[in-house]
Length: 204
Ligand SMILES: [Zn+2]
Figure 1 (cartoon, rainbow, N blue to C red):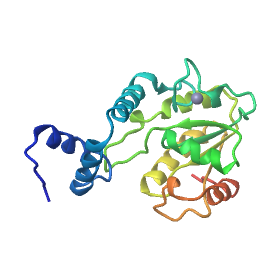
Figure 2 (figure 1 turned 60 degrees about the horizontal axis):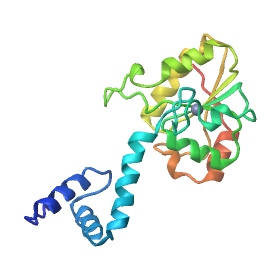
Figure 3 (figure 1 turned 60 degrees about the vertical axis):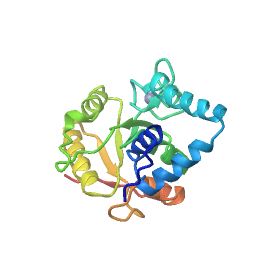
């Protein structure tokens, strides 16, 4: 259902809101109504927050997560993290989930997606090359793939597993507790913690 208000600024706002994930026509109208009633000061704070994410946030040159640090992010800089263990995640937001499980004390590497023949996502679209560069430096002993349990996650795990095979690196994957099709963002911390502890080796 398309609602038209014939108020150009309002229709334009709704048009923009509908681009957001999970926001349909009805939700966009509800959000627009809520925004219209919002005090000017709060609108300014929202505008500023949106501007800041584009101007202040960049990718960490070490793990490729989002950071506002000048150089490496706090996790890459930390001397309390194991340097020989690396957890590969799909998106920066996945790091907070793995951290919340409290079961991982190594370092991270963010792929920024997964391989997908369906959506034409190729290895060069992800940060696989820098991951391989890290491996070649010889410090890393184990790579844990904390990827979603879906087809793209499987394809990516196999691809990375093959690459690591030549470098004598143990490659494991989150196993128990994640149902097929499971997004790691939707499982609780305890389940994720168990999945980390019970990880299984990727056999090529
Ligand atoms: Zn980092």
